[in-house]
Image (cartoon, rainbow, N blue to C red; front, side, top):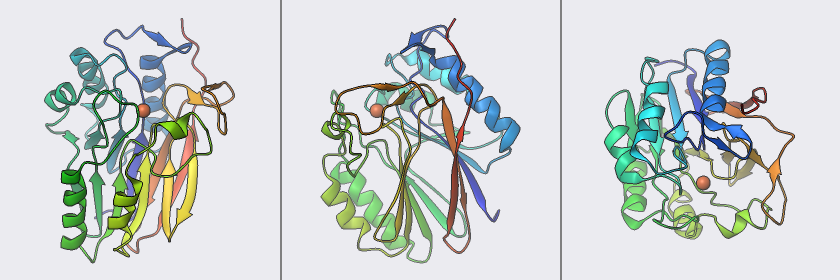
Length: 257
Ligand SMILES: [Fe+2]
């Protein structure tokens, strides 16, 4: 396997069936296309692409087709999991055949990447269902000698932003209760909060990546867009020894229209 194994993380593109649609002043198709274009100039080729939800803003089946067309010809596996805005049935129907994969896991000689569904239908907050928790537990028990990266949409720890912390993962204790029993979990990764997060918890790196469209203002009590930060993606390099190197790649602002 490649050492390091390189993953590009894109999250919360909030696409629409129409490529011209604008949300919070940005054309979300243009910002995703631009972000991917920067990645193709700077960090290409990766070994995998990971997309942690809110692919669609409008829950339209056609939107997943728009996403599929952006990522289908890259020659790179694209691992996808749903966010609160996604339609799971449409997403699964469109994004669960190569090079795409819906949830599940991916592994190589040294690492296992687990993609969890934390969506609660009709809710902005999330929960990792019992079946998903058991899937995580089984994988950890089956691979005690591999390093784990666990990805989901919702934040399992507080962000310090009051409004965002009303829509987090609702069952962090159950989630961490499983993770804490294993010393080979290296990294947790999520989207949803449209801003950078990079902390450690019991030796595990906790990471969130800004959106490919617009960002939220950190530490805000009320919903607020962060006009000072452009679209972004993250590069992660997963090493054989379990270490992780990662950087957020900020791109340029793309003005709608
Ligand atoms: Fe979200």
